Structures are given as structure tokens and as C-alpha cells.
Length: 465
Ligand code: UTP
Image (tube, rainbow, N blue to C red):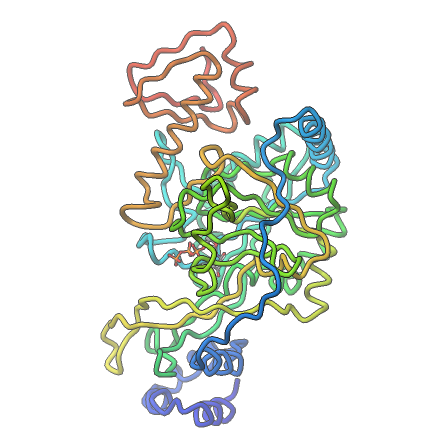
């Protein structure tokens, strides 16, 4: 972006404070400032700004009903279908049809942790980071299926270099460097409620990643979509870096997705209560849709009960999806019609003198689940919360590291219990995916063995009994 274009743009959008700031910079800093704005879509941000300044228009709805969801199987037919899906999913894995994508481009602002969220030391005994845990799972799955699973990690400008450096110094956690792809999502400038862009530092605007919905564009623009197609990959298992309980590349989920020929599939859990802050999976005008908890429309349906007194719209979105590659291509070809959402957050900026200030900012983002109603074929599957979902979001309280570790301990405790071992409540337990990828493998490995539980227990790659 050249200087003239930049000054015209600021004039057009009433950003005189930036013009004044720019004029005070040295020539070298001016160049850095201009360079840092390359590729940012200012027209979009100001269009969204005026859109969100208008009062929210009421949604015109014809029909709201619970979506069709594959619940936990109980009847013989459901169990038969489940086994069929499982076999199908496993064959997809063995035949190199699936890549794993981890969305790790977020700013992790609520956790207040210095560094990419993926480097957060999460595990119960060894304090392995989320990236290490996920990478070891991919390694274990690759061994299990005798294949190399492509691992795609979506980063953003804020954490891309740090993420790559982290993998580098850790020797990619034993994964083949050539099978890991780091790709960046786009950024958008944040804006104040008064319509002003803000500075992050002397030579940069404050920008935010464009939401996990940015994954579709980023896959295309990075060239990865084509790469995956060339490798014969048909579908992507998508998850987010903040959920250490995610069952990566779950063959059952992959199998159902394939069986229903879905373009996008979603895992859901039963919502804890009417207030829980998760998106609600339902059917709107005949289309599967996720309504975000913060959406004003959600308030109308969050606490609706069925005739037995249970939540009618019980399905909570846990941000685990299967994405068909041709669908991602089609979405891009259609111009990615995902709606933008506005998040109101505290952001760290600087004033004209360069002193740090916290201010309220509007961040515009798209969400991955808004692609669901755009698909012709979807699939949704119920998962057990305790086995698959405990995201780390906050420094304290709900969804904090303490809660996540408690859930991880309970998760491993249950595996051991099913293998015949009763572990006292005050003992921390960690089972590396390289020791056992699931509870069946654990049972098999521990058959006829004894374990002592006097102190915290870690079953790692080289653990012998
Ligand atoms: P959240 O919306 O919870 O954001 O993202 P966050 O970055 O973890 O934390 P806060 O809101 O700033 O506190 C859920 C997941 O989606 C990813 C995040 O990295 C996280 O794994 N994400 C989010 C992206 O990859 N890109 C985005 O633009 C936003």
C-alpha cells in the first residue's frame, strides 16, 4: 500500500488520528507501518462497523426444530450401524483419505498466557503442552494405521513464527517434518465502538485473526487444498487446539460422515444446563444450523423444555467437524458467504505517546459452523462430554487449567478402571497416546499386570510393568 492510497483511505473513513500519528513517524517507521497494513481489508471492516452500529434486524424464521442427530446407540439396528461406520472410518484412515487440522490461530486472550495457546503446559503429570499432546496422538495414530497422517496447523500473524519455532526446537515431537503444514489465516483490524482503528504499537495497527471460519479461505489461499487433493485426501478432521480431550481422527465420526456423504459433520454433547455457553445445534427452516449462545436469538430457545422436562435443544456444539474437501472448494467458489460476528473484547493498545492502554475493541470474525446451513448434506453425532470435551479458555474458574486437568484425570481414571485398576482420587494420572491410543489398547497392554498407585502415575511410550 503506498502512502497516497493510505492517506486517502484514512480520510475517507475519518481516521485523522492515524494520519497525525503517521506524519510523526520517521521514514523507516513509515515504511514498516505501511508494510504492516498490506493485505488488510479496510473496506470490509468499515462496512461491518456500520452494519453493527445499526440495530439488529429480527431473524425471520419459519421453522425451528431439533436437528436429526445420531445419538448414542442402544437398539440393535443402531449398534449395527455404529459398527459399520466404525469399520468405514478405519478403512478411510488406513487408506490415507484423512488429514487432521488444528485451529490454533486464536489470540487466547482470556487465558492470559504468554505465547501461543498450543504451547500451554496442560497435561496432568508431565505438563506436556497442547501441541505436544496433539502431535503425540498423531504419531500414535500414524503407527496404528501404518500411515502418515498429514497434520495441518492453522496459525495467525500473531503466533505463526512462535508456533513454528516451538515445533522446531522440539524436533516436531517425532513427527515427519514434511507431513506438518503450518498455514496462516487472515487478519482484520479491530475497531473501537466509536469507529476508530487503534495502534498496537508505534508501527502496527491492532488486528485480530478473522475467526475460525477463516479456515476455508486460508486453506485455499495457502495452496493446501490442492496439495491435499493431490495426495488423495478426501476429508479433513477439524478440531481446535484448546480441547485436550478431543478424540483426534475418531474413526466412528469419520465413518458416519462418509456413510451420510456429508459435506460437513459436527460432534455435539448434551448441554449441561440452559445457561451453558456453547452453540446450539438445531434445525432452522429445514437446515442444520448452530446458533451461538451470544446470539440474541439463542435466548429464545436456550431454556425450552420437552414434555419430559429436558432441554429440547439439547445438542451443544463442541467445535469438532469433518470437512469434505470438495465442499471447501465449493464454498470458496461461492465467495464464502459466511456471516460476520462481532466480539466485544478488551484489547491492549498504545496511546499517541506509546503508553500501553486497555480499551474496548470490536473484533469481527466468521465462524466455521456457519458453513453448516450452506451444505446440502450434513451429519451430526452425539459424543460423551466426559470423554471428548473440556476446553481450556480462562485463567481461573470455569474452563480453567484446574478444571481441564481434573477432567483429564477423570478421563484416564475411567480407562484404568475399565482395565481393572482402581486409582485413588488424589492421584494424578496421565496416559500417553504413545502408550495406548484408546481404552481397548490400554486394557490389552495391562492385562495380567499390576500397577502401584502411591504417587502420580505416568504411562508413557517406554513404560513397562
Ligand atoms: P476462541 O474463540 O475460544 O478463542 O477459539 P481463543 O483464541 O482460544 O481465546 P480468546 O477468545 O481470545 O480468549 C476457539 C479455538 O479456535 C481457534 C483458537 O485458536 C481456539 O483453538 N481460533 C479462534 C482460530 O484458530 N482462529 C480464530 O480466529 C479464532
